[in-house]
Length: 239
Image (cartoon, rainbow, N blue to C red; front, side, top):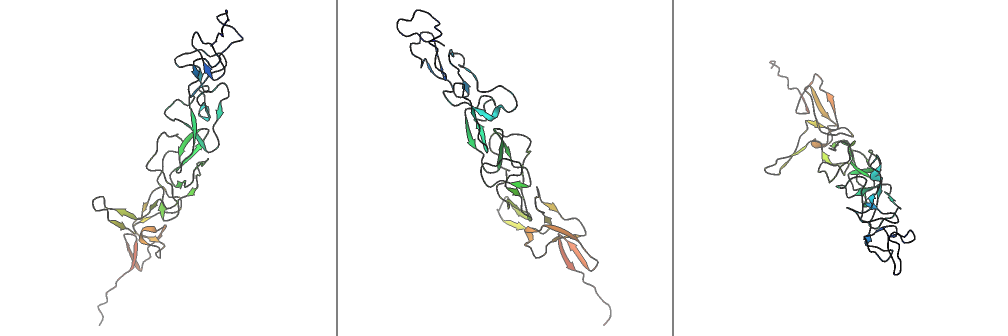
C-alpha cells in the first residue's frame, strides 16, 4: 500500500501511500502503484495487493445491489440510477461493477431487476414499479412471473404488449395453423385464458371469436355450446 520514491529509506512512509483507486505490491516507486482497483471493489488510499485487492463495493446487506464500483474506484461508490439495475447480475449483490437500463418486460428497484407480474406488461424501458406500463387489454392475456423475486437472465414469458396473447387463439404445434375458439374469455388484466362454463356463452358476441372478454348466462330460448349461443329449434307435430 506504499510506494518509495528514490532516496526514501522508511519502508512504510505515511506520506507515500498508493493513491485511492489503486493498489500496490512491495517495491512500488510511484503513487500509481501496481494498478487500478478491480471492478466491483473499492480501494481507499494505501490499499495493498490481495486476492483480490481492496474490499467489496458495499456491505453485504439489503440494498447492496443499489451500488456499484467501476474499475479504479477509491471510496466514491456509485449509486444506481432510478430505472436501472446493477451488473453483472451473476456477481454478488455487493460486488457489482456497472449499471444498465431496465429492459422492456421488467421493472427495477434498488438495483435489482424483476419481471412484470402476470396480467401486466412493460413496453418501455426503465419501469420502476410492479404496475409496469399497465394492465393487459380485455380479450388478451399476459402471462408473467413471480414479481417478488429478482431475476437473472431473461424470461420467455415476460409480457411486453397489452395484447400479448389473443385469448382464444391456439396454434397447432405440428402445422402452425392458428384456430380461433369462442370457448375462452379474458377480462382486462387477465393472467391466463378462462374456459366458459356449461350454460354460458362468451361475450361480446360482436367481437372476433378469439377476443371474447366475458360471459353471460344462456336463457331458456337458447342452447349454448362451446361459448356460442344459438336459438333452440322446436319441432311441432301440427300441419
